[in-house]
Length: 182
Image 1 (tube, rainbow, N blue to C red):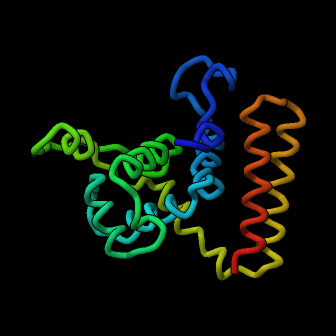
Image 2 (cartoon, rainbow, N blue to C red; image 1 turned 120 degrees about the vertical axis):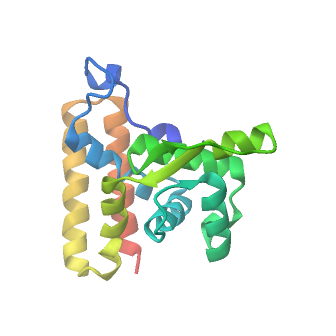
Image 3 (cartoon, rainbow, N blue to C red; image 1 turned 135 degrees about the horizontal axis):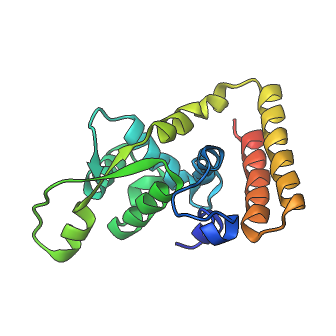
């Protein structure tokens, strides 16, 4: 999706890691917040709210699409293919986890959308629920946003890898969003 290339997790080659999946816990925690500064952040937030607001253990893309249509808002107008792409990007960021089950479908496209089911990861739930920033003291919120932005700028200054520079930019975007959101 457009804009996702800047919000993806860096490759092992970019981070200097030797083996796939050996990412640090700190990096995984930071990546889980990426959807909050993505260009499609309102859609991502709507999708994550579906996962946090359900008692079901896992959901397929059609299930999420139906719940988004019921609630209205930015996610209600997503096409099935776009929603599937958003879900896959959220999985890469560590928010929901992929789970599978037996699928009954009437066509290939329905099979492809239904074969993957998603469940909220513990980290993804924490990130979504932490959005109590809407009720946070503006001074505390400002201090948090300023600190995160400063940390990413320092990281990018020490190592100008494109993904680190991009994360510093996203942190600044998140700071702007947090400081202007009522």
